[in-house]
Image 1 (cartoon, rainbow, N blue to C red):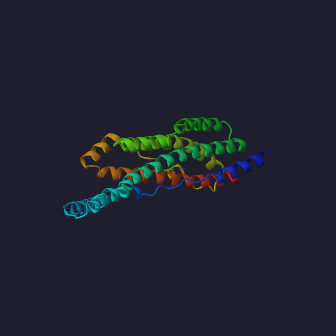
Image 2: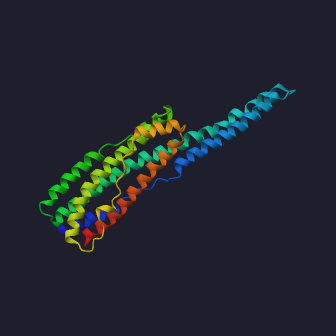
Length: 253
């Protein structure tokens, strides 16, 4: 029965859905969309002024032409507006999904190690697991944050702030738990080649300095900030993926 339970747990761990990378081009797509959209708006505005300066003999035709530019700008406003919102959606959704998945994964791994028999070391592992649960138990509402980002001009700065700080706290708690798990596995499995150095801990970045730089560069540094957050997240989940596969393979042996 015990071996059947272990097999079922390992199968469950392998079946957990993998975290998805966030495309690193999304932050730059915001900038490109803004530039292209602004250029098109300027072009349409010039066209609109041309229409206004022409002396139409038919008032109805003049009225129709005068509405061309306002209507034509609507898709570009949506483009400039929706791309950042989609980026924020991917960030917050990815964060929540990653926290939920890692909590489930380490619950499974801890139970497997307890069934395998790790002595008193299992109590330390469980303690570290509880710390990770507390850190991960901080789900952000995707809908609420998107609404606030849509109506508040600088709310995106807060999104960047909590993304970095939450990922830093998560990666630190995960590192402590991984340290215990890897030590136990290495003492029993000579074929296990990974180490704690393979875990990508997210760098703690100064929100205050980054906001100042964003203001001084008229928002340009904010694009780089968004790229850094995306890159840090992708590197972290990639290292998690590799470590998870190796740990599960070792526990299977």
